[in-house]
Amino acid sequence: MQKIFTAFQGPRRLVSGPAGEVALVVKRVAQRPDEPILIFEDATGRSIDFDLRGGDREVLVRLAKLVPPPVAETALPNEPRGRGRPKLGVVAREVTLLPRHWEWLGAQPGGASVALRKLVDEARRASGDKDRERQARDAAYHFMSTMAGNLPQFEEASRALFADDRRRFTGLIADWPADIRDHIVKLAYSDRA
Image 1 (cartoon, rainbow, N blue to C red):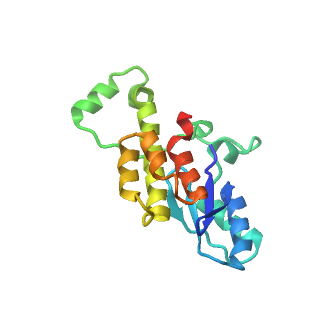
Image 2: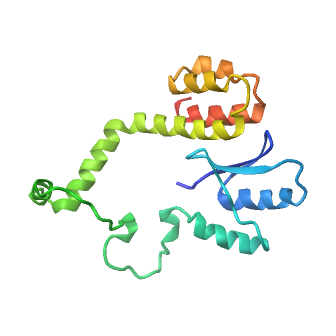
Image 3: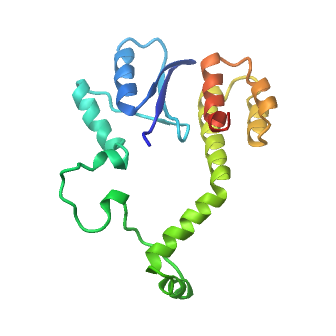
Protein backbone atom coordinates (compact mmCIF):
# COMPACT_ATOMS: atom_id res chain seq x y z
CA MET A 1 0.00 0.00 0.00
CA GLN A 2 1.38 3.39 -0.97
CA LYS A 3 1.91 6.03 1.70
CA ILE A 4 -0.26 9.12 1.34
CA PHE A 5 0.81 12.58 2.45
CA THR A 6 -1.17 15.80 2.83
CA ALA A 7 0.27 19.31 2.70
CA PHE A 8 -1.30 22.33 4.38
CA GLN A 9 -0.48 25.98 3.91
CA GLY A 10 -1.80 27.56 7.05
CA PRO A 11 -5.34 26.21 7.50
CA ARG A 12 -5.76 25.41 3.78
CA ARG A 13 -5.15 21.92 2.36
CA LEU A 14 -2.88 22.16 -0.68
CA VAL A 15 -2.61 18.59 -1.92
CA SER A 16 -2.90 14.94 -0.89
CA GLY A 17 -1.19 12.03 -2.58
CA PRO A 18 2.05 10.08 -2.89
CA ALA A 19 5.25 11.70 -1.60
CA GLY A 20 6.57 12.76 -5.02
CA GLU A 21 3.35 14.42 -6.09
CA VAL A 22 2.98 16.30 -2.81
CA ALA A 23 6.64 17.36 -2.76
CA LEU A 24 6.55 18.86 -6.24
CA VAL A 25 3.38 20.85 -5.50
CA VAL A 26 4.84 22.10 -2.21
CA LYS A 27 8.10 23.01 -3.96
CA ARG A 28 6.25 25.23 -6.44
CA VAL A 29 4.03 26.86 -3.81
CA ALA A 30 6.94 27.35 -1.39
CA GLN A 31 8.62 29.67 -3.87
CA ARG A 32 5.95 32.23 -3.07
CA PRO A 33 4.82 31.39 0.48
CA ASP A 34 1.96 33.29 2.06
CA GLU A 35 1.91 31.10 5.17
CA PRO A 36 4.03 28.22 6.49
CA ILE A 37 3.60 24.88 4.73
CA LEU A 38 3.42 21.63 6.69
CA ILE A 39 3.38 18.11 5.25
CA PHE A 40 1.77 15.22 7.14
CA GLU A 41 1.92 11.48 6.66
CA ASP A 42 -1.73 10.42 6.72
CA ALA A 43 -1.08 7.02 8.32
CA THR A 44 0.49 8.58 11.42
CA GLY A 45 -0.78 12.18 11.38
CA ARG A 46 2.76 13.34 12.08
CA SER A 47 4.47 16.14 10.20
CA ILE A 48 7.42 15.28 8.00
CA ASP A 49 10.03 17.37 6.24
CA PHE A 50 10.88 16.82 2.58
CA ASP A 51 14.18 18.13 1.25
CA LEU A 52 13.02 20.28 -1.66
CA ARG A 53 16.44 21.62 -2.73
CA GLY A 54 17.53 21.29 -6.35
CA GLY A 55 15.55 20.31 -9.40
CA ASP A 56 12.46 18.13 -9.52
CA ARG A 57 14.46 15.01 -10.42
CA GLU A 58 16.82 15.53 -7.45
CA VAL A 59 13.87 15.95 -5.09
CA LEU A 60 12.23 12.76 -6.37
CA VAL A 61 15.45 10.76 -6.07
CA ARG A 62 15.89 11.86 -2.43
CA LEU A 63 12.24 11.06 -1.69
CA ALA A 64 12.58 7.57 -3.16
CA LYS A 65 15.22 6.88 -0.49
CA LEU A 66 13.12 8.42 2.28
CA VAL A 67 9.79 6.89 1.20
CA PRO A 68 10.47 3.71 -0.79
CA PRO A 69 7.64 2.38 -2.97
CA PRO A 70 5.54 -0.53 -1.67
CA VAL A 71 7.27 -3.94 -1.68
CA ALA A 72 5.30 -5.23 -4.66
CA GLU A 73 6.58 -2.34 -6.80
CA THR A 74 10.24 -2.74 -5.83
CA ALA A 75 10.82 -6.20 -7.31
CA LEU A 76 11.66 -6.26 -10.98
CA PRO A 77 10.13 -9.27 -12.82
CA ASN A 78 13.33 -10.15 -14.74
CA GLU A 79 15.63 -9.70 -11.77
CA PRO A 80 17.30 -12.93 -10.65
CA ARG A 81 15.97 -14.26 -7.37
CA GLY A 82 18.25 -14.49 -4.41
CA ARG A 83 18.02 -16.75 -1.38
CA GLY A 84 14.99 -16.69 0.87
CA ARG A 85 11.54 -15.47 -0.05
CA PRO A 86 11.96 -11.99 -1.54
CA LYS A 87 8.51 -11.93 -3.15
CA LEU A 88 7.00 -12.23 0.32
CA GLY A 89 9.15 -9.40 1.62
CA VAL A 90 10.69 -11.61 4.33
CA VAL A 91 12.98 -9.62 6.62
CA ALA A 92 15.36 -11.24 9.12
CA ARG A 93 15.36 -9.64 12.57
CA GLU A 94 16.38 -10.70 16.04
CA VAL A 95 13.76 -12.11 18.40
CA THR A 96 14.58 -12.66 22.05
CA LEU A 97 12.61 -15.38 23.81
CA LEU A 98 12.99 -17.58 26.85
CA PRO A 99 14.24 -21.14 26.31
CA ARG A 100 10.78 -22.63 26.93
CA HIS A 101 9.39 -20.41 24.11
CA TRP A 102 12.10 -21.57 21.70
CA GLU A 103 11.40 -25.21 22.64
CA TRP A 104 7.70 -24.79 21.92
CA LEU A 105 8.35 -22.95 18.65
CA GLY A 106 10.87 -25.55 17.52
CA ALA A 107 8.36 -28.34 18.11
CA GLN A 108 5.72 -26.73 15.87
CA PRO A 109 5.15 -27.98 12.30
CA GLY A 110 7.30 -25.87 9.98
CA GLY A 111 9.54 -24.64 12.77
CA ALA A 112 9.83 -21.36 14.63
CA SER A 113 9.39 -19.00 11.67
CA VAL A 114 6.16 -20.60 10.46
CA ALA A 115 4.76 -20.76 14.00
CA LEU A 116 5.61 -17.10 14.67
CA ARG A 117 4.02 -15.98 11.39
CA LYS A 118 0.85 -17.93 12.24
CA LEU A 119 0.72 -16.44 15.74
CA VAL A 120 1.17 -12.92 14.41
CA ASP A 121 -1.47 -13.41 11.70
CA GLU A 122 -3.92 -14.81 14.26
CA ALA A 123 -3.30 -11.89 16.62
CA ARG A 124 -3.74 -9.40 13.77
CA ARG A 125 -7.07 -10.99 12.80
CA ALA A 126 -8.26 -11.03 16.40
CA SER A 127 -7.44 -7.38 17.10
CA GLY A 128 -7.38 -5.95 13.57
CA ASP A 129 -10.37 -3.65 13.88
CA LYS A 130 -9.31 -2.31 17.27
CA ASP A 131 -5.74 -1.77 16.03
CA ARG A 132 -6.96 0.11 12.96
CA GLU A 133 -9.29 2.27 15.06
CA ARG A 134 -6.48 3.06 17.52
CA GLN A 135 -4.06 3.94 14.70
CA ALA A 136 -6.68 6.15 13.03
CA ARG A 137 -7.49 7.91 16.31
CA ASP A 138 -3.80 8.43 17.07
CA ALA A 139 -3.14 9.81 13.57
CA ALA A 140 -6.08 12.20 13.91
CA TYR A 141 -4.84 13.34 17.32
CA HIS A 142 -1.26 13.95 16.12
CA PHE A 143 -2.51 16.01 13.18
CA MET A 144 -5.06 17.79 15.36
CA SER A 145 -2.44 18.68 17.99
CA THR A 146 -0.24 20.34 15.39
CA MET A 147 -2.88 22.10 13.32
CA ALA A 148 -5.62 22.80 15.86
CA GLY A 149 -3.95 22.74 19.28
CA ASN A 150 -4.81 26.37 19.92
CA LEU A 151 -8.32 26.32 18.43
CA PRO A 152 -11.42 26.63 20.64
CA GLN A 153 -12.55 23.45 22.40
CA PHE A 154 -9.42 21.50 21.48
CA GLU A 155 -9.25 19.76 24.88
CA GLU A 156 -12.92 18.76 24.82
CA ALA A 157 -12.61 17.58 21.22
CA SER A 158 -9.59 15.48 22.20
CA ARG A 159 -11.56 13.85 25.00
CA ALA A 160 -14.45 13.10 22.64
CA LEU A 161 -12.05 11.64 20.06
CA PHE A 162 -10.47 9.27 22.60
CA ALA A 163 -13.89 8.38 24.00
CA ASP A 164 -14.95 7.48 20.45
CA ASP A 165 -17.92 9.85 20.74
CA ARG A 166 -18.12 10.78 17.07
CA ARG A 167 -21.23 12.95 17.32
CA ARG A 168 -19.82 15.08 20.15
CA PHE A 169 -16.40 15.22 18.47
CA THR A 170 -17.73 16.47 15.13
CA GLY A 171 -19.95 18.97 16.94
CA LEU A 172 -17.02 20.38 18.89
CA ILE A 173 -14.86 20.88 15.79
CA ALA A 174 -17.66 22.14 13.54
CA ASP A 175 -16.44 25.76 13.67
CA TRP A 176 -12.79 24.94 12.95
CA PRO A 177 -11.35 25.79 9.51
CA ALA A 178 -13.03 23.48 7.01
CA ASP A 179 -9.92 21.83 5.55
CA ILE A 180 -8.45 21.10 8.98
CA ARG A 181 -11.77 19.81 10.32
CA ASP A 182 -12.41 17.61 7.28
CA HIS A 183 -8.91 16.14 7.35
CA ILE A 184 -9.19 15.27 11.05
CA VAL A 185 -12.50 13.50 10.44
CA LYS A 186 -11.03 11.67 7.44
CA LEU A 187 -8.05 10.47 9.48
CA ALA A 188 -10.17 9.43 12.45
CA TYR A 189 -13.15 7.82 10.74
CA SER A 190 -12.56 7.15 7.04
CA ASP A 191 -12.29 3.39 7.54
CA ARG A 192 -15.54 3.36 9.55
CA ALA A 193 -17.77 5.39 7.23
